[in-house]
Image (cartoon, rainbow, N blue to C red):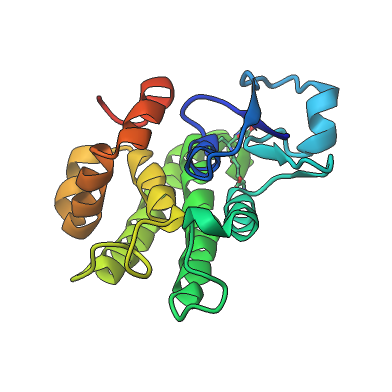
Length: 208
Ligand SMILES: N[C@@H](CCC(=O)N[C@@H](CS)C(=O)NCC(=O)O)C(=O)O
């Protein structure tokens, strides 16, 4: 059975969604936020971060995008992503990598600014630059959604859920909604998605 290490409001949101959409049983372990990491957890997550997915064969993996891609591959009937040979697969891989390598790290720079400067007075500048970088990334994704119902292909995929998870972490939601209307259009639809509504009750990603 899969085992998901997660925490409410974390990147575990999209992995939990993937497992639920694939209709596979999993054990959920909530990892409290702590500056004194549990050595047992560190063995599976060297940076003390969630999500971590332990696979049925006992291997554990970090990195939300990699976990999503693997689950999509292992459960092809669940429609978590365009098929490996579908033309939209390239977009799926592109945007999953973009979101996890451009946007997620910018969000970490905002919320863990002290890690990104050795200047005791430097966190404000780190946070400002992080928000500017987030804004740049969201503008790219908003443009990619123009005229489209879904970020990739013709249906809901984990890329859409990943995107709404990230936008929900924007520090100024009112500005985000106004600035990126195509992301807001997608998000409005997903706020009505029954599974995400249910997940949101525990994760509280956005006001219910
Ligand atoms: N690159 C990782 C980032 C995961 C991550 O930063 N998780 C956050 C929660 S959303 C976390 O555990 N932060 C605690 C910390 O960095 O100390 C991924 O994509 O899964």
